[in-house]
Image (cartoon, one colour):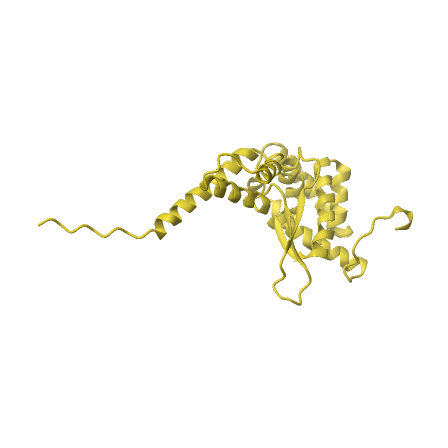
Length: 229
């Protein structure tokens, strides 16, 4: 594009409608850790989510105000910013979110507390790639290509869950070492996750216990021996 401007998808909407759509998608992403939408929407929402997480990691006054400009209408941004700064000061004293009474009212959808609190801490050592877009089959043949947009290293990280499942399966099959692809995926999903190796091992053990329980439930019960006369 001339002048070096970044290309983006218009999503068949006016600029204001497009911004509102992306704002809603990213808000849902930060709330739920994972959303399903169309592929084009997921890719555009991913760009905005990455930008916001970068602002959250900077955690400066200018980055906080920039995040507010993206997510809130101008008329209310000053009030919300004042309340948000009060939240941040209380959080820095060691209080948990549940101990701060105005968290929900001051920051709709818990967006800013999560962005400048848990997400900033989660991605402190990660240089980038805070989100992931995965293609999925559309529910109907006439639907647009669908995708899952998720926050990586979170409780709904699909690649983390699938890697744990693969390792558990290979262990159950008697493999002493992981194949090259699985070993690479293990490194990817644990490298920047807090206590990543321990978290993966815990998930694997949970899967192994579930598999053992299912096998016991599926195995036929032995007939009771007749009582001796």
